[in-house]
Length: 498
Ligand code: ARG
Image 1 (cartoon, rainbow, N blue to C red):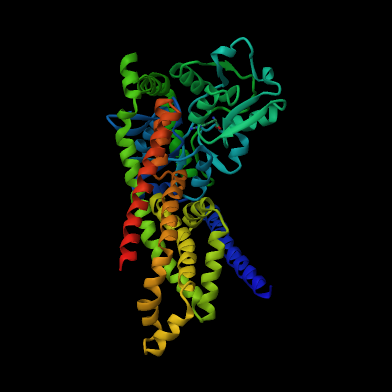
Image 2: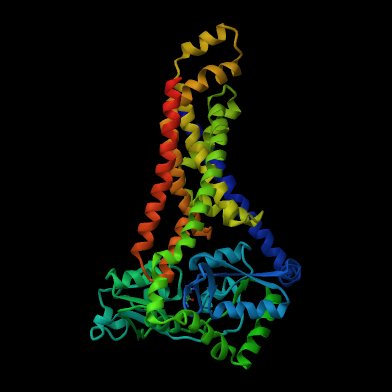
């Protein structure tokens, strides 16, 4: 009991330590930006690039297009970003993520600005600085065409469910103004549309321009006015609080965009062309076939295999070290390993990943792919450590005693007597761990790593087909994991022979 308390203390202490690090840095950064003159513009110019964050599920603002087998983010927001970057004489870099991650990414310096159809609301303006609005749009509801006579605006949905994107203005509006309806949120607008089509709820709330784009390009749905009221001038570019130099630069570009009416004359027509694909109906159907997206799936498998392979190696090495530390007689090594293992096993991989990417990102900027690999490896190590430890413990103490009395050193005993036998015992459990690592690596898609899951979501959004991409993804994962378990079995048989 006493021991258990000791562990709890250690784990809690470690946790508090971790929690302290980023907070301190935020505070330091904040005072820095307010006291010293703002260096945001200078930094962008030095880098030579302006990084824009966006959630490309929002036509005509931003969406992903399959152009000759390559995915490309297009839309009016990309044009706006391009214009700002061009006027600054730097390159535009587009980083994609879920809408509700954008402001976190901005706060933690992963991106320089958000352009994502984001409405400049007073509440958001408390935590970010907005440019002037570049586009004004109303609020609509998408419904199934079959329900045309049933619904007129949000008031007709008493007791019914309306979907909205997580973290969006629409989610807030429905919560505040449509109290008699149930709000259902999802991370991606494309998922909301699929859910609407499959009767998961009866309407989806989106900005008018987006509602029109979805209605035009999806069979069986139509847009109606929502009746929801908003107080805002429209969509604007969001910058880090205090980044006045960048806001000013953006405002200058936006003023020019407005003066020349570039949105209506150039950006929207261009987006419309991408949306329609400039294709006949037959061509559109052909490009909707999964085969047209084979390169997406291949790229996804590549990323998934890459992340998994590296994480398996590092997870195993670190796991072995942790297991030995936990078994060692050295109190400190033992305590560190135990605390690490308990802590990592007791917190979700998703949170660990976000912590590494966004939290540690305050101190060192770790790219998404590397963050993903680090998170998956560190997580797997804790599980591998326990597997190895149980393997070592499964070898009778008589073995150690015998080999020691034959004159083998402690490490030689471990290496030549215990480990080979332990490995044989834990092989199946290790195989299990590697298989789950492959599956769990799918979590990296939330920070925009282009793994298999990420790609299948893009294909879903681009084709408006919900099920087929999932089926293909499932099959591909199965082929990978089954391949790995078969490989593990070959080695298992080999070990049993000798
Ligand atoms: N205008 C809405 C908002 O500010 C929705 C924006 C959603 N944008 C997107 N790229 N999914 O919350």
